[in-house]
Each structure stands twice: as structure tokens, then as C-alpha cells.
Image 1 (tube, rainbow, N blue to C red):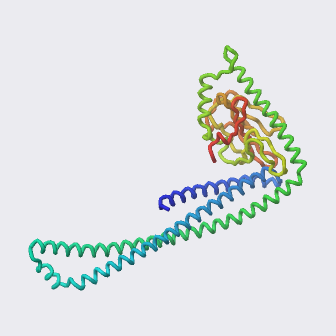
Image 2 (cartoon, rainbow, N blue to C red):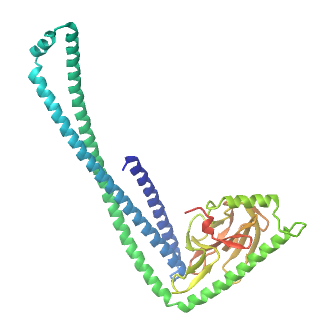
Length: 383
């Protein structure tokens, strides 16, 4: 492996390590907030799941880093062996040169070798040869010194790499212990939540009804907006500003900012398995992002606030922002920081996340294109 590639790989693994450590700390903070309510909740389980995923990812990063360091050590040791072989050859060649010089080139022999030349031209050539022979011996001695220095440097690098490897192994062992503890907590929490199956089924039913009301409300908002935008022939048509905004929104796929600065995806888009109830699936029209209490909710892109409403059965309020033919939906907000008709820019604060009685702070985020629901993770920048 070329040293530069090794350095690049190690830098990338270091970035991954720091990202995973940050995710673990974030999950721990959110977990503490939910656990402080002394209730066993799905939000607590989801935060624990996120912590486990991040710990597993961090352990994989440690393992990759250790393998990379192990390869570097093996390569350094192979290089040292090759250099030691070269050094032995150089020493043998140098010893032979010294032996030949001592045998034939004492002061008298050197003068005889020069002045016994049959011509002046031959004398000059012999003098030149002696200078070159002396220089080659000096060069050979320097090369031996350089190889010796390189061997010493490689041995020092190998020792340093071994030290790094031992530290990573210790950190991995620490994470392994933490992961075992997290998994035990997870299994215990799932067991406790399973005893509340009737309550979970009832909550699931209420959520489904609330999501249905939200869907109908969004569809009605879109219908009314499209009705207003009809041209003289009765067809829906965006204004030039709306068309430009729509194009810009579409061009920022996979680059949209997150609606909250901190948090993790607790439930993905589409049909998802229930975290506790076996065989039960939940249809999610967007993504749920679990975050911290009082977290500010932000607009993910430039647009206009087209609706602020409350949905029966759903916590807090809902804000809809129009981006041409696209719309983003922010549900489970404790309060709004904007009014209908307000123009907003990317990352503008629009509200605060709602925290329920279980201590769970979670925002529901959706992306629509006209009447079609889209997977928000296909639009948000990777995290």
C-alpha cells in the first residue's frame, strides 16, 4: 500500500469515528431526556436503537482502522527486511572495495601505478580512474549510512503504529462493553413495552387516524392552491416565480438542510415494522426525526408558508411551506414562529418541536410534489 493511500484511508476512518462518536453522544442526550420521565416509551426505545447502531458503526470503524494499521506494520516490517538485505550487500561490496584498495593502493603503489604509464595521456586517465574509485567508495559509505537511517526511521514508525493500534484495540474493547450494556437495556425495554401491547395497539390506531386527517388536510390545501393557479383555459399553471422556485427545489435533491440541527431518523418513509409489535407494520408518509427538547424547527428551503393548523389526535401544530409545485410539511410543533403568507429562507426558524408526556421530542417531516408523497431521505443531505 502506498503511504499516501494509507494516510487518506486513516483520515477517512478518523472522520467516520468522530461522526459516530458525535451520534452516540447525541443519542445519549436524547435518551437521558426520555429516561428522565421514568416511563418506558417507544421514543426511549428508538433513541436506544440509534445509540446501538452508532456503537456498532463505531466498532466497525475501529476494526477497519486496526486492519489498516496491521497492514502498515506488516509492510513496514517487510520494508525493513528488504533494507537490511540491501545493507548487507552494500557492506559486503564496501568491504571488498576496501580490501582491494589496501592490497594495491598504498602510497608507493599508487605513485608507481601513475608514473609507470607509457604516455601522458595514460597518466591522466589513470589519475582520473583513481579519483573515480575513491569517490565510488565514499558514495558507497554514504549509501550505507542512508539505508541505516531509513531502517531506523521505519522501525520508529512501526513502533508508533503499534502504539496507535494498541490504543484503538483498548477503545474498541470499551465500545464492545458499552454495546453489550446497550443491548441488554434494549432487550429489557422491549420486554417491558411488550406487556403494554393493548396500549401500543391503541396508540397505533390513534396515530393512523391522525395521519389520515393530516393527509386529507394537506391534499385539500394543495387542491385549493392549484385551483387559484388555474389559467384562462382552466389548467393549473405555476407563476414564473413559482416555476423557478420549483426548479431550484428539484435541483437541490440530496442537498436540502435538515429541519432540525440535531437529531436522528426514528422512523423512515413508507411501510415500516413496528419496533415492538411483531408482524405489525406502520405506514409513514414522511420521516420522524427525534431530537432534543425545545429544538428549533427550520425551513429546509426557500418558500412561502401556506398553512398553519392543528390536527385532532396529533401533537402540536402543523406548518406547510410551498416551494412551487413542491411542499414540505412540519408536524408535531409546540408553537409557530411564522404566519401564513410569510416568505421564508433556508434554515429560517419556523417553530419549536413538541415534547410529549413521555419526554419524546419528535418532528414529523414530509415532502410532497403536488399530490404525491416523496421519501424525504431522497431530498435531505446525508447525515
